[in-house]
Length: 336
Length: 287
Image (tube, rainbow over the protein chains, first blue to last red):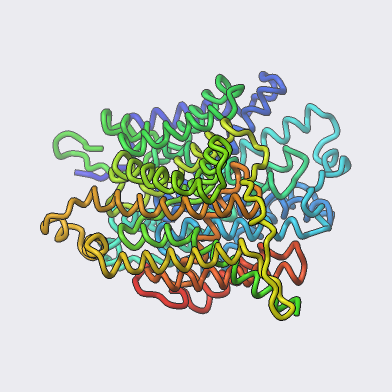
């Protein structure tokens, strides 16, 4: 008898994933400029969804205010690049560190709110960040700021190379976030998190420090979300308080993606994002109806299949693409 | 004198915030439900008031006669049709479902009424004022404040003096035992939501008379109501009124220092109270 985390499905999935990743890395040589931009956007949404899933799906921290860190990262990146003259590739990780640092006092404050009130507390924090950004004249105040052309050009000389750089950065950030979340979940801390997800009381009685585990997840998520935010606004080239701290763009869509794809699984956010973009590309002209339909689908999923699309597939087949859960082998049929 | 005036105006504004908050406080007290769509339902009530008062050519305050029962009906149907299925130990389903509702209501209003700001026309009431000792009090803010006090007194009386209130308190304490005693939990929850949205109806119409509104403002109304609840302390209706007043005064004083500081000052006072008294000023129950 032995315990293993991988299965034939997950081994195959990892191998296919590696090949797909190599093909995606080569995309600037085979994809059009518009496709590159779309794929870059998809990577950033996969990152945001994966991070929100770690927060809500595993740590039970249902935040509706992650736009606070998207906006903070965007503004942090603009401030470092524009005002302090920090090179772009240094400013992005610095914005992430700043996001993690600012999350420390925020967590200490809003962790005093429980459950659903915590959710609204995160929203208040995002509002405070937005109002402060709108009060900062150096970054354009309420009307926002544009990234000077000299900074954009410092990334690469030719336009094609710049587009490719932005694409690779987005791909790199996606690999970094999904990889980080995967490694966290496989670590000792991940085991604690999964225990908290399944039963908080039982986890506490086994000696898991719930507060510290959640605090760790909140701060890491904030830092990585700020990194994604910096990259989003590097691609947009322009930032304003309303765009940077948009609850619809950075929280509502992300929550719908995770819920529809499958909350509490690593595969769910990826599948949800692909579905979200497939729908968006076909229904984009419908504007508000699209959002309403998305809300209806998310509610229906929450009521009828709370584990989401991936949860349904996994329950039927036992498949798992990322080798996470432990399987005992050698005593009858291996179980998923 | 202008500072005293700011405090007075803030206090009266606090009445409106207490109206935003009372419905939120009520459903949390009875069923531990936090309704993320609460702010959007306030805006929905304002649009209902608009349609009814413009359609029938009546004063918006008279439209309350129709808006309040309509909102109560929506609340009952919402709870029995959807929200009751999400009630349980897990906080995720109700949160995500009400979040989805919030997006649906907001975009539904956007489709029906566009993003143009609207306002309820209340005629002379909007500008009427009383003067006393150099201070001027608008009749409308005063009416809002008095209504808020009356609504909270009414809810308090209902909670502690009526059979319905007893059912609410019993269900709040022990759902399973209340069920055994013959209370239908699904019905009691739906009545609580109906009452919550009836108050929301009043709040929405007053909101629409006081300022212009558009489909996107629901989120910040939810936040104001939520801040009033937390400042006042969970489960305490009079505390919620005090929380609303504190928030209103903080915003008015902040706005007096600099107009752009109005909202920020309110949020900062909320965070300060959260830092020094995490359970609020007058808590009656555990979060």
